[in-house]
Length: 69
Image (cartoon, helix red, strand yellow):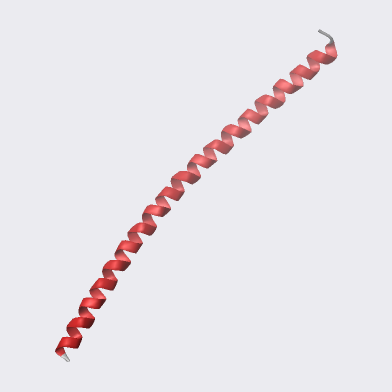
């Protein structure tokens, strides 16, 4: 194998290793983002449930006030 081919293979191996590191980093960020999105979804769902409960309470109070009037 000539020196040129050996140098080219070494450069390709080095670039491949760097790209693998970048891929691993991107995958880690993607997993973190997915976890954050799941947490945000759970919070939004909890807020919707609380909102609905407040709306139901407001409706009950409105009906009660109308009956007393």
